[in-house]
Amino acid sequence: MSLDLTGLAYLTALAVSLGGLALIDRRLRLAFWHAPRRSAVVLLVAVVVFLAWDVAGLALGIFARGDSPHQTGLLLAPELPVEEAVFLTLLSYTTLLAWRGTDRWWRRRQGVGEDAADGGGAGDGGAGGGAKPDVGGAA
Amino acid sequence: MTNVVLNIVVVGVLALVCVPVILRRPRGTRLVPLLVAAGVMCALTLVFDTIMIDVGLYTFDPDKILGVWLWGAPLEDFFYPVAAVLMVPALWTWLERRGRRTAREERAAGRSQDDEPDGVGARDGYGALETVRAVLAASRPFSWVNTAYPFAAGYLVATGGRVDAALVVGTLYFLVPYNVLMYGINDVFDYESDLRNPRKGGIEGALVAPERARTLHRRILWATVVTNVPFLALLVAWGDLAANLVLAVVVFLVIAYSAPVLRFKERAFVDSFTSAMHFVGPLLYALVLVDAPLDARSTWPVLVAFVLWGAASQAFGAVQDVRADRAAGLGSVATVIGARATVLVAAGAYVVAALVLLVLGWPGALAAILPLPYAVNVLRFRRLTDDDAERANAGWRAFLWLNLVTGFCVTMLLIAANWP
Image 1 (cartoon, rainbow over the protein chains, first blue to last red):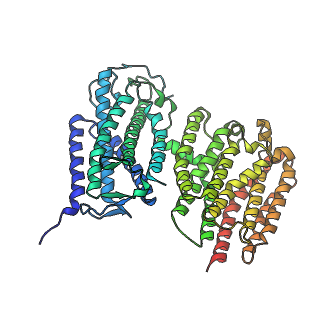
Image 2: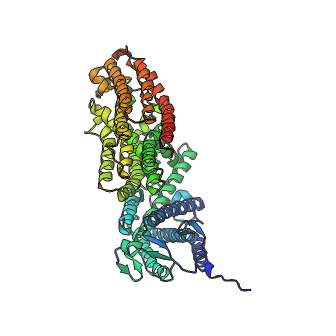
Image 3: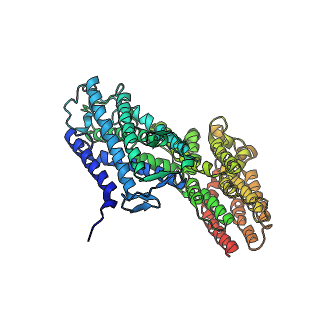
């Protein structure tokens, strides 16, 4: 009795990578540990757009699923494996963390205050503009 | 369509949507983080796409890519990280500003210590949901079926019931984005005259509160571009030259109807024909897309009668607005020849449409009955004068419901005529 786990290789690699990103996120409080709902919406919308793009590419016959044994074979749609959705999540999450991290570092260097109203505790809230009067007003 | 064309279209649309949002970030913090993130993501793509392709996770049709490889990844793959770097920061920024705005509204009275770097997002006070709702309201959901149906029906009848991607994409396009284009820009450019017209509201069109109009109009125009471009790009990729020319003319007539300078809707008679083409256009496009012969005895009478029906309906619709249009300095068939004459011309056109439909063989000729209730409906107003032209609104409301009944009858006829 032998259990072949080759088909889970890609999915496992993606899961491990996502786990690593989550650790970075938690340590630096960049995305889900800063504004969880916002992070979830960002990733969800990005993945949906990417999937639509994939479907267009598949429909036009530009690319296709390979014959790699490393995938589960579960499909979201013809030629569209479940792994693709996880991969696109990884792509978007990596982008989010890379940009958020750089943005925070760069703002500190420039002395521009961080996203103050989030309440998230980067501790440099008033560095830039300070307490400006509310120009727009809620009227 | 090759991969690079698809990718340029996708990234182009994303850039159009995302760049304005990213530009709302504080000065001096826009470019560098974006560039660093883009560099990181492209480097990761270079390495991991090479691996993913090498182990056979996915494959490319060699005829559809440029053949430029960066290590083991085709150049086209690098559009994905670029798209991610546009989309993710833009979404984050947009949600962040919305969150901040909500927080401010909750605090209601003053005492805000918000660090609002440039205040652009806070000024407009329009949430995403409200925008979507307003754009949809502007697109007259009640009338969506009027443009989607001619396309879908024409396509299905001409192909003998072929259900494929072009049918689905085309029908979806003429169902929503086409109507956003048509009524959205109409509302934006008609705002001045609509303000003076109490009739605009409910199923006939939604009017926006004046103080919010400018913000909303900008968003309607954006929504128009964003919803139309992807569909049009796909349709153009599928169609041959003739189909694309028809599509171009149809879209042009929709824009020309209300766009500044062109303003076809203010030119008597051109207005009625253009409006008719808004509904005949989707049908004509479907027929040309599938190479159906337009001069067949089962086809041209339908097209001609449909144009007559559409022109008559538009002309009659303008009757109720005669005074409002004149006051606003707008032209229409009705302002030129008067309310009563317009009613009579419209009734005549309905009758001619019925006669033309008689040319269709059995059972199609039964359709000749369909324009007659419309003629009866408008003839109720044969004694209308310009001064009480607003009364014609009752006829217009009856017209909107008549369309649903007629659509049902047309469907039954189509099934009867095409059942094997």
